Length: 311
Image (cartoon, rainbow, N blue to C red; front, top):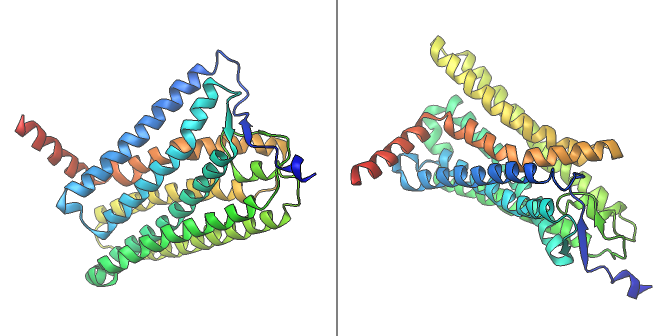
């Protein structure tokens, strides 16, 4: 029996149920989104590192959020693109577990970074004169380091529980990457402990930070309402609404995917949600946090002007 339980050394990702000719369209579309995600977030990182005016805690947090988006896209999208062209191509057990670890690590980190950014913005709006004291570089580095450390630690806990299980077949995963709940379905042992830990981690990583985020934005809105200038109030409300939209998209999809009861119909919907998060969410980061930001656009203009001046 032990021998049979260790026979599965690779898995087959079923991906999307599409015809062979239809695969080319989503492959081209998803490849375009993937390239734009990497290029766009890469440009943000380059501008923040090269422009001294962006060397502030706020853009330090934004740079790490861009890194998390790029890393998450790199850990899931390439395998999805490969599966669109070769649906029956297997992935090794080690590769699948690595992908599961990365899939858990980066969204957890992103969630905590969003909380850090909301705190940073709350201090900037509510306590502008004390901002440099409250959010010093030491504090900023500590907050970012804690976000990455917590994301990695939680992912390692999940991986330890996944690796203790035997896998003896079937070896087909009904997803386009190694999502942890889909992997657990293939284990030939009791997975109740794993599911309990996943639920507890979801509450800790998603529900807790969401409450902190809502508290921060409540303070921000209260401070905005006290602004005397109508134009300043309008701009602040516009920025706040954009950030809340981004937070709502992330936490809404994350909570549905992690905590909703499972069914066949919901499983198909979750594929679409994961696809949205993997491809469109990082591009929303470009629109909301960067392209609408005057300082980032100013840094881009200065960089382009320098290049044209050299030529």
